[in-house]
Image 1 (cartoon, rainbow, N blue to C red):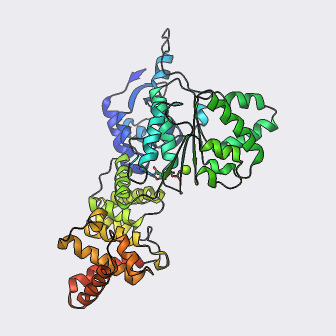
Image 2 (image 1 turned 180 degrees about the vertical axis):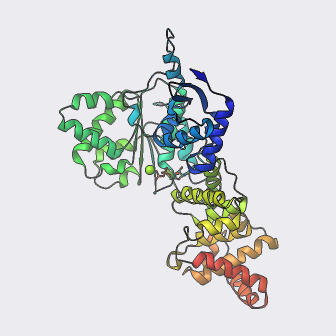
Image 3 (image 1 turned 135 degrees about the horizontal axis):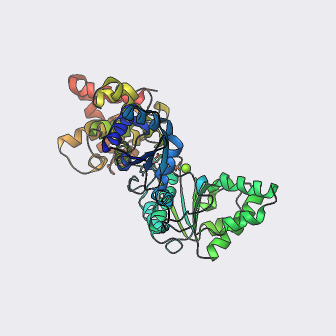
Length: 445
Ligand code: ADP
Ligand code: MG
């Protein structure tokens, strides 16, 4: 058995960041190369979720990087401290017990933690409740029900609860599953005549997290089974966490006894994130990959991705890859080049005032709150007037409605802004160019 020189790990990491930046995460720096034994190198990872991420996604990359670093083709083994201790004879294993026999099926992403979750006005309640649940499962809010549109962070929050609880109480029986996962296991158990072991398992978790519970809609026998699972857990003081695309009473074809139970703890909504939240999310996603994005780059991406946050990750990966291939730093020009075509705002038909607010504030480097404020300084009032002008020209909203969106101004203010910008556009080249550029961003399809 040979101890691994520290330089090896450094070279492995360099190779990985160089060749596979989109697979790399900032916590890779905490990975330790332990030893090389019978042609296998062992890497030590503390967090179980990180361990599984590496085992699932990174074996080939590590094989290649290790070969580059040592000149040898070695087998790769990712282990946690428990396994490390286990191998040494006469050592008693304590502490981090294996959580559940089905632990291996629990697909948690190491990216979905509370640390990487950005809190904004749109998700504050959901986040606060989730964090309370993770601190005191079964006691804070039970059940905890979170709902919101696609890509707004429900799965992220649910998995963060699991990871935080695992960290706080390593022996807790935790299970995260999609609703479809629950239903499939139920149907399999029925087919195989193994209902008692199914029930035994599901009714003994300390924390059961079921994602996308709206999928229970119309599934009568699954609803029945889930009802009993829920009751057993709830009555036993175990924590249940659910997510859905709609609040309990708006899930179609769901039995009323389920609706009422789902709503009896805390129901929290996640709204579409505002511009500032999106900028912070972009930065958080970049930080996971050890990237620091300039403000204008983060603003550019955030202004163009407003409905589904999922697209942010794709955009960052693409920018990161481009920067690496070209051997340049990430700046606005590179960003436009790499993702300008991929991520687009809605076409004119769906153009909303929120799009305009976001784009104008991003373009002028202002906060949305500035744009909506009473401030009259030219640096704020001109962009605000341009925004009103664009809203009047490219949406069907009335002057009064536009005024409402722009911080509650009345229709005469909007009318004045529209006329003033319209008039000045012809004589002021600089202004005309700014507006043309904003329009091209807003209107391209
Ligand atoms: P949902 O389950 O609601 O459809 P996800 O949890 O899958 O949405 O989120 C989609 C993507 O957006 C994920 O990459 C997630 O990390 C990210 N995301 C959403 N909201 C936030 C947030 N507030 N902070 C950080 N990332 C977020
Ligand atoms: Mg989800």
